[in-house]
Image 1 (cartoon, rainbow, N blue to C red):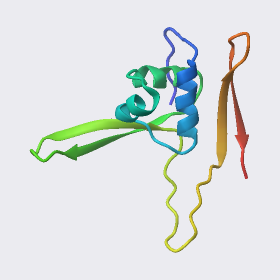
Image 2: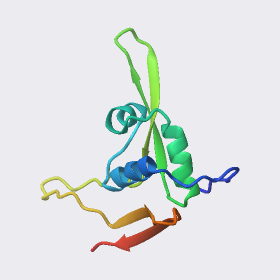
Image 3: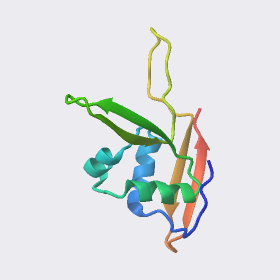
Image 4: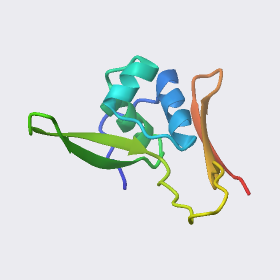
Length: 116
């Protein structure tokens, strides 16, 4: 998925913390972003991270309330769930790890290392 950049801005420090958290295999939605990172601008964060070249996917979730009302929300993630076979030992693992950082001159860089 390629994002067209209208007004590119580099990711903020908080954006990079959210990216690091997602790279650990976690998914994030607006409620988690507010609770964990004290941000209400998750859409903007995802936009800046995608413009910086990060591959971020999403999945729309829905549920029905007690009153029968249908609600929906969106979860963003960098890695798909890995389904293990039943009976095998399950350990949290990552095939690759993406690192995004800023240096002293405030330039942004992204590096990817494969973990085996």
